[in-house]
Image (tube, rainbow over all chains, first blue to last red; front, top):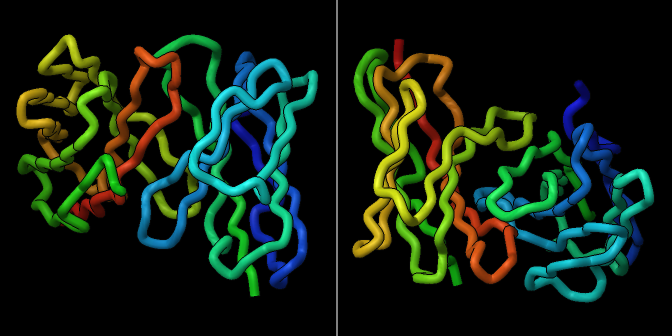
Length: 113
Length: 114
């Protein structure tokens, strides 16, 4: 049973560029959430997708956008990259319903130079 | 504003002894709490959770205690094993609002010394 898979594992970009990160949820899960973990911090919620729509959003600017596909996989797009966007980006999946524990992928380490 | 706080960045414990990790929160609307464990180069892994209607939940060597009046929870690991060495994150959510996004603390690095 494949867990949550993310690609790529590492990425280096320069300021002003755009980046797309990808996530495949755990088998049987239909909800995907994205988190940003800066160095020395806990993960921070970016947004959540269900039924191909953004359901909830954290305190992140519009430069952060996403998409969910019919097969439940998801993309996170970040435009106009800033140095402060350097972080580990974690994807988490769950089934619909409250208090569902999240299953996390290993993350994509993004470095912005 | 950090709504979930873990004030101890690190903790070292001898193998076989008890590890106690602490977490405080400020948002009284939080009603579901979780602990995640994270090894290097891996994503966080769910460990144990507790609903606000309970004050204790136990799963094998792991027990979580919730003190709602103090807005405090703790994770007890007994006995501690070297394989427990990892970063532990406390997380909280406000399920009554229909949201299940998690608010995480900054983590506590536990080192279990053989």
